[in-house]
Figure 1 (cartoon, rainbow, N blue to C red):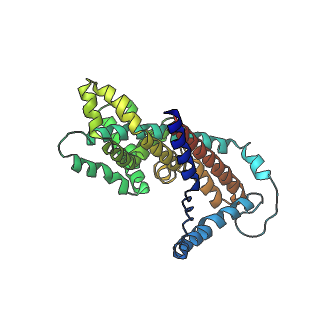
Figure 2: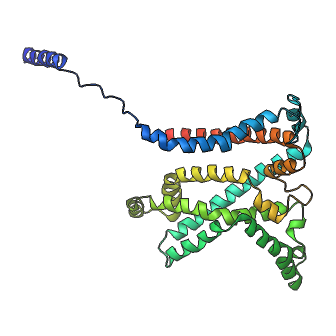
Length: 311
């Protein structure tokens, strides 16, 4: 029996060795027409973004005011940035505001998405209503809420004899940032909500049915099924939200214009006001630092997400 098995095995090995190898698959050739369609986008991106960006980084090493003659001054602008308290304050406000707003937006959006994907009446109509703020301009929203915070709420506070409500929150340097968070979240929640709804609808119903059969509570279903299965959507919303909130500008302009004083001045507002004030090279150095910081944060978020997917 052993001899027969060995003979068969040896014969099979010789047949496998003598059989022709399958031809190696050739790398698929990219049709030239694809490059032709890609060329306009590459040219537009290069002319509108890459070239101005490189030029801006170059001028950050000069004393240029945006026009006229300039001299090369090396790292002088960058050294001055780290000693400028106004610049440091703008970074602290921007990152603190972005962090708080990301948390508020994602918590509220996920809660609304859970409600709008449950078995309730008129959920399709409600989804359409909640999306409306997303299509309204940020500056218009800011001016509307500015009127509410500056006039309507103080009038209501006076009528109800509520002392702390009689003064506009926008005039308080310690509380004005709360108004900016509220208005920014009001506009940002619809987009985040749509992503969470898509994530919740992608979860198979069989998983929840199995959990119900096992006697899982609503909290167990949420914490052990919903959260792990929509974690990828959470990462997407956090990355997109943090990126957008770091560039906050129009809502801040419409609400406080960076005030009271400089309490709510973001990095983007500082850069743009510097351009208008003749500090072109100095603010280009600020923009370069801000760009590097944003890239590092994005890489950190992506690395955390990659590590989570590998677990």
